[in-house]
Length: 159
Image (cartoon, rainbow, N blue to C red; front, top):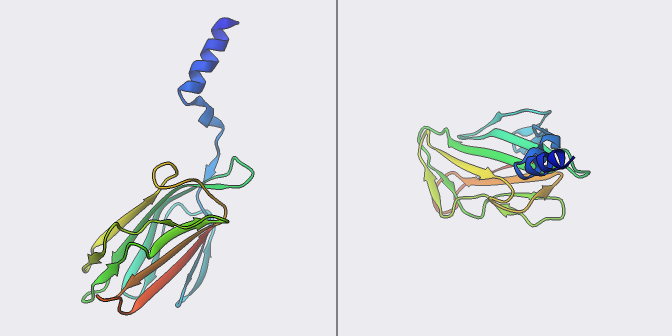
């Protein structure tokens, strides 16, 4: 009996308790000036906008607790314009959950992306912020030129 108890304790310490955790890809609603789309349970997707792209390369929602929690989000913003720079500001890219203050994902300082360049963002609880409860809202504003010219926005609601 002592041997089985010791194996159970060692298994819990080694992370075996995470075997019961259930995750799934996030379902998403994407809202821009160009339209409104809904995607169910996609692992990755690209939102093509005028002169730029938003790519979600990984999204995982932990559905084990009563209120689902965002576990992982990997996001890329790409400048697809042949001639106009894309400017990312630190406070213009954020994610929030219900009844939570938004977590800033934006770069630490202003980033200018030239044609074909990409900037990556990551959200993982404990690494970037506390757990975010369901639903999760990703707000993205970029600028098509320096000095806050021509703002472009996208909103992605994840379930």
